[in-house]
Every structure is written in structure tokens, then in C-alpha cells.
Image 1 (tube, rainbow, N blue to C red):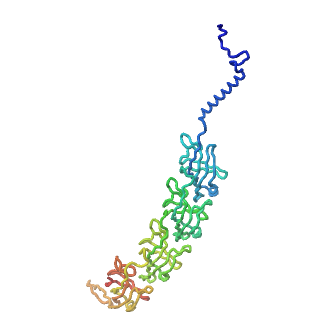
Image 2 (tube, rainbow, N blue to C red):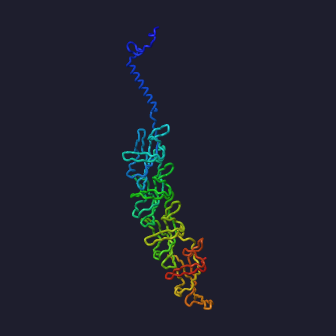
Image 3 (cartoon, rainbow, N blue to C red):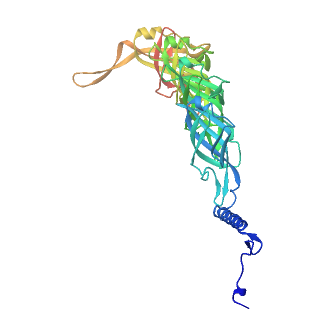
Length: 471
């Protein structure tokens, strides 16, 4: 065969490739193959189909916002930072703050699931990450506090005892049954209120038992931005603003009626004004009532020692009863006032309005020395000192003799002589005593041999020394 006959023929006499395709068709086929290969290369280089969508939930703290903005944040608000991410508000929590309203919300995040986990707007929803929420009504930024699977905030109600002060002019701002509201949402209820006088005469001291709407993050209970624990301060809306209140207890008791016996020294006029049934009123509400009163004479006829039994409306937290700013315990000072008098006495007994001990009557020997005849002449057998209908002392006998005086002569000798005028007086008196574990008391005070007692027989008041017979 010739060399010419052995060559490969690509085009025939009609211009067809391999005798099948013409040149134009072959060029079109090559172009299609090239585009297909390029497309396959592009798909391969971009990693294939988009990553799958996923959902998670986060708690976002938006901080303190003006109330007019806080009221615009509502369930169902949405924001999409990009085509693969979407945020929907599922729950909203409000609490009052001094400069506005604390806003916390729960949100559903739609994002992408990648090899590194869930991604929202190009990053995982880590704790502390700041997220933007922009709607037609507001544009806010908040911090992620918690990530979870629930679309609701973990909310609840807690009974909390609070202490605060209010000007007396605003006595109607916090009352029993009042709904506490901020940014058009109810955040709690005032269950009970106790008001006392404050050291500032223009203020009232308030204790409130409230039911507050709270939320939990990572197992910790919050009211607004503040952790709900004793000693922390929180904001309480009054209707005209927000007042700071100190948490005294979470749960527990609130009010108790405490019986106490108070000892004080007051003017004779004030003592005469004290009566059982007297009430201590604060803002028109009774916080205490006089249950018993005993009035005793003192060395000063214008001053009286009083033992007043009181029934007090106390505030209880940490298992300790409190009246006003002080605690109710033996030795504590208690203030109690009416329009006619004021007591600032010491508590002598808690749990009873009566003096301690078993009442007894005994004939006690008393003595006065070197008294003027005028005083001696004023004493008569049968004289009585009484408190109300109760007899405190009755004179049973009187013995008088000239008082002795001691003289020293010029040569240094000592002589005992009778006083020409003054007398020594010895008396027997039936005294109303009380036997206590600490000893015998008279008019609320312990007595023993040598003690001085004061007896008030109306126009005559004497001081005498106890000699015997009191035991």
C-alpha cells in the first residue's frame, strides 16, 4: 500500500468530521462540553449545596431602656441581619429601674449548622456576644445571657419583704393590693404594708411584702438587673416614679403581733394621759395599742415612772421581730406616741404586757432618819398609794422619836445627843411586791435591805429605807 493510502482522513469530500459531523456542528459540541466542565469545576470549588438551617434560643439582656422604648419591645418582633439568619422575640420581661426600664427577652435564632456548630450571622451565639435587634420601632443592642432549647423565659413569682422610705405626702403611693407596673407590664403586687415613723419627721419608714415577677438565668433568680437576694437594692414603681428598696428577706413571715412591757420616765401630765386602748397611728393605720399601764412616783413630783404594756404590729425577717428601725428584744428602745404623749422607753419584757413575777403582799419595815416634824406630822396610819384600783402601799403603823445627832467637842470628844427638832420615823407598810427569779421587786425595781423606796400618798411623798420584812 502507498504511503498516501495509509494516512488518516478526518474530513471527507463533503467536509464532514469523520464522515459524520460537519465542522460547524463540531464547534458547537466542543463549546457545550467546555461550559459543562467549567460549571462542574465551579460547583466543586464552592463546596456544594448551602448548609442546612437550624434553630436555637437565647436570653438577651437589653439593659436599661427608656420606658417609651421598652414598651415597644414585644413578642413576635423579628430581625434578619442576613439572608441566612433570622431573630424572633418569643418572650419579654420588664422591671423598673431608676432611669427607665430593665428589658430582658427570649429570642429564637434561625441560622446555619456548620462543621463547627450553629452559626447566627456569621458567628456562634456565645454567652456575652452582643446582638442587634432592629425593627421599624427601635434599634437596640443586647448581650446573650443564656442559650437553651425553650422559647420562654424561666419566669416565676417570689414573695419578697422590702424596706424603703417615702415622703409623708406620698403615703398613698404604695398600698395593699396595688399592682406594680412598668412600661405597660405588671411586674408585681403589694400584698401588705407596715408604716412607721422615721427618724426624718418628713418621711415614713415602710416595710412591704410583695409578690414580684422574676426570671432565672443559669439557676440564679433575678428581678430586672438585680439578683434576688437579701441586702440587694431593687426598684419599685410607685406610680409617680421609682423608689429604691432593700430586700430584707425572700419568703418567710412578714407581720406579727408582739406583746412587750416598756419602762420609761415621763412628765406627770403625760403619765396621767396614758390609758389602755390608746393607739399609735401612722398614716391613719394602727401599729400599736396600750394594753396595760402602771404609774409610779419618783423623787421628783413632776416626773413619773411608767410601765406600759404594748401590743405592737411588728415586721419579721430573719426570724427577728422589728418595730420601726429597731428590734423587739429585752433592753431595746421602743418609741410609741399618741397626740398626747410620747414614750421612748426600754423593753423590760417580751411576750407579755405584765410585769414579771408572782404578786404578793408583805408587811415591810421602813425607816426615815432626821426628818422635819412637818413631814413626820403629815404621815398617818391608813394612808394609801394606789395605781388605778390597785393598792401599792398602805401605812399600818408609825413610830416616832427624836433624831440623834453626833457632836464633837473642842477637846475632840464625841457626844451623841437628841436633835431638838428633827425626828427618826419607823413605819410598817403593806407593800404590793412581786417575787421573781431575780428577787423581790417593788414598783418594778428590785429591793433588798438598805434599798430606798418612794411612797406617794397624794399630797405627801416620802423616801424611806427598807429595813426588813420584804422576803
